[in-house]
Length: 93
Ligand SMILES: [Zn+2]
Image (cartoon, rainbow, N blue to C red; front, side, top):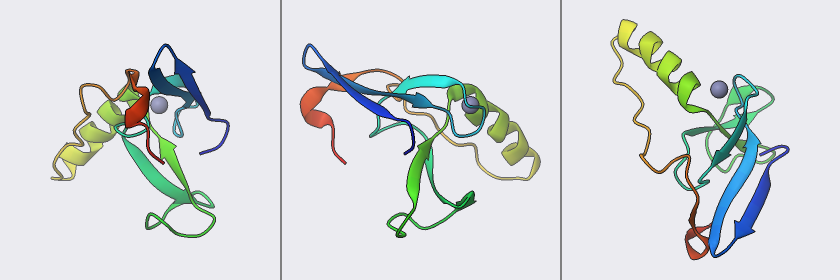
């Protein structure tokens, strides 16, 4: 992820960063936030060398779901804790 800061505070942890789509600043749980693995602006398989996992905000996912439903795809589900801090020990990268 680019320009992302992992924050630890009071045994809680979260990431301050930006939505990949709309560039809105965003705090999120890196384990749960809706994300895509991106390289050179394109979605790639997780683990691709040079790729980064990029987060998306709630409003972009909501907009994407409108398009998905028009195209007959099932909606992306946002975890209820996706944009909340989590216990520090749950952070994994
Ligand atoms: Zn967004």
